[in-house]
Image (cartoon, rainbow, N blue to C red; front, side, top):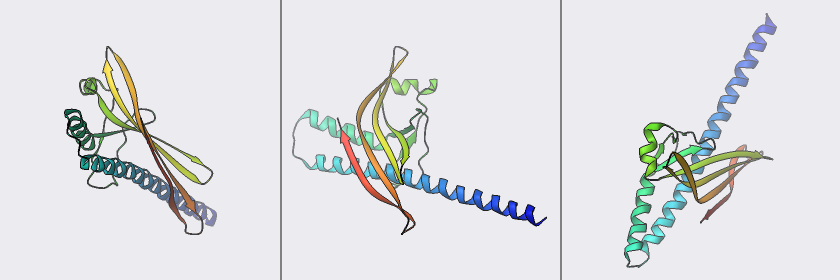
Length: 171
């Protein structure tokens, strides 16, 4: 009987520990999206403050404003991701790009952030790629606009994840 109770408690604690790890992964993932959005917003603010008087520049600023309010998020398998733990200034939306109901929206072109993560050594690496997705003539096209790499490393001394690298590239 003692063995059954011991095994049951062990299974309970292992399950509880696993749930905490999943929650931590989601918090780190959402933090990566917030870091990317902050970088994008700060770049927009710098561009907005420049004195360029042309129609193209004004159109560029308008498109960036629209993009900031319509950020769609998908994973590496092109499936929607729900982002919850982020700054309230950014609204991340979900879209299933292969559903027929969304094809009309995608025909015009939709900006998406495509998310991929992996672990190397004791580092958790998130890659967020900026893409534009279009649907035309029964074909999907994915254009690459840029990407961000955000790296967290686990510190055994502090017993927490630390941000060690943030790199943004663009086309």
